[in-house]
Amino acid sequence: QVQLVESGGGLVQPGDSLRLSCAASGRTFSYYFMAWFRQAQGKERECVAAIRWSTGSADYKDAVKGRFTISKGNAANTVYLQMNSLKPEDTAVYYCAAGSPPYGATMVPTNYRYWGQGTQVTVSS
Image (cartoon, rainbow, N blue to C red; front, side):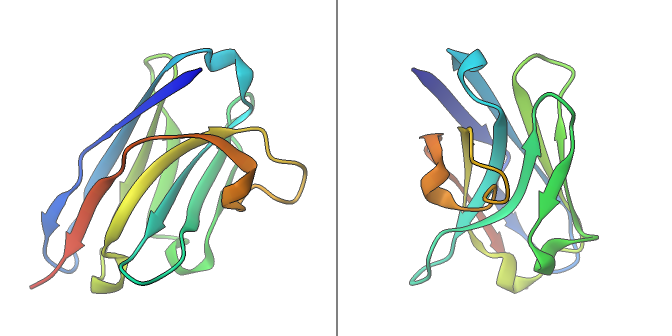
């Protein structure tokens, strides 16, 4: 089993920045990717960024490219999501996930086996 714990959410104003953290423990050798998903009220869960653990290569949802950055931490099995220039439409519960998606499907939620409990991000003036 793998346990994922997110932190760093909160209430910010449009244009502000936040950094989310996700710490993994347990059988961390059992997956190749970590990702950040979000789910706004009444909407489907969507992937905003995914990173291949071995190489650090990343994929992003078009709506966040240039504003969000996913990265591996110096501490083992830690991943971050740096979110800049936040917009009200970024408001959602953000989830950390780990898994081994097939090629070309790194943004699909069903390809991730392990999930954190989620952290709320609210962008409002």
